[in-house]
Structures are given as structure tokens and as C-alpha cells.
Length: 116
Length: 111
Image 1 (cartoon, each protein chain N blue to C red):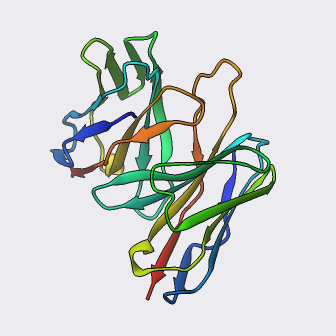
Image 2 (image 1 turned 135 degrees about the vertical axis):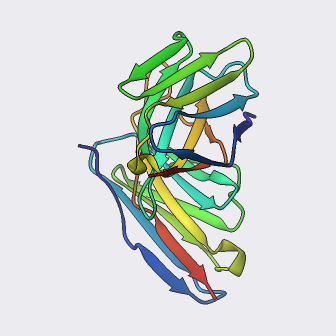
């Protein structure tokens, strides 16, 4: 059974703080993703990584950075948190398919971040 | 890039009725179409998926149909039950790391 865990379920931070969100998966998946989920907007991709130390920008990378030092761990960093980054953050992972076909993404439980 | 539109945004049905949620996509190269169910306060979970070489797939009360020509796909839930109440997301993808999600449909099944 795939397990994707996130370090916090709820987080409250102040504007300007540096925020770290951690995600760990135990299925040896190559791909890892960070999304934010906002009402009426669905899930929007912030960053993804297809290998250790590799990262690609998603649709809304501004204000965020990521780190993948180990295969099982993918961190999302808010360098200087702002109120418009208040959201639900979801991590996901999937296998990388050599044929290029998309594999199922498995999600973590989410971190609800409030920036005051 | 890919753009996925999902309708309706909210859907309310009586228990036992059917529910249909529709999604359209823009990128004709998309070849993988999963559906996720997200219950309140929980993570999205895959409930069914379909690849572009198949027109229909069924799993008990859930079915998905794909029309590649029209670039739309639909989720059908028959004999709905209160526990089907959740937010449902469709998605479309053309490659390993390029999945686009619809905005979601909040389904309410009234007992």
C-alpha cells in the first residue's frame, strides 16, 4: 500500500516567515509533486521532481522553491510567506514510466497552511 | 499547455439516482485520464482511470467514458449512496509529469 506522508496537517505562520513543508513516500517512486488546492481552482502544480536533485517548475512556482536531496523526500519551501499563500498543500508521488505513459499519482493527507 | 474544464461544480442527487460529471480537455496528445475522490478533510484518492486506447471502463457502480474525437470524458456513478458524497476531480495527462486537474465537482447524495 502506497504511503505518502506530510510533516504537518495544520500550520500557522506569520507573513515573512520561512516555511518548510515536508513530504515523504515509501514506495520508491521517482516522481514527486507539490500542488496547492484552492476552492474553485482545483489542484495547481507548483513544482515537480523526477529524480534526486532534479526539479521542474509547474504552473505557479512564484514564491516557492523545492528541495529533493533523497529519493523519498520532497520539500516545499516558502522563502517569505505571504497571506496569498494561505492554502491547502498536497504532495503526491508516482512511478516514472519509461514508455512515457502517466502513472497514477498518490497523494499525501495535505497541509493546511494559514499565513497571518 | 493542457486545460481541463469540469462540470458541474456542484451536483445534488437523491440516493439511488445516477450522477454524471463531465470533463473536457484541450491537448489531443493527452492519453491518461484519472478520476479522484476527495472526502472532507482527506486526501484525493484514485477511484478509476482510463487510457486513450480504451473508450469505456467500468468498476462496479463507477464507469468512465472517453470520447477522444470530442476531447471529453465523463464519470458515471449509478445507484448513488450517501457515502459517495465528496468532491470529485478529473485530470488529463500526456506524460509522466504533466497532469492537469479540473476544478472539482462537489457531489451531495441526499438520503
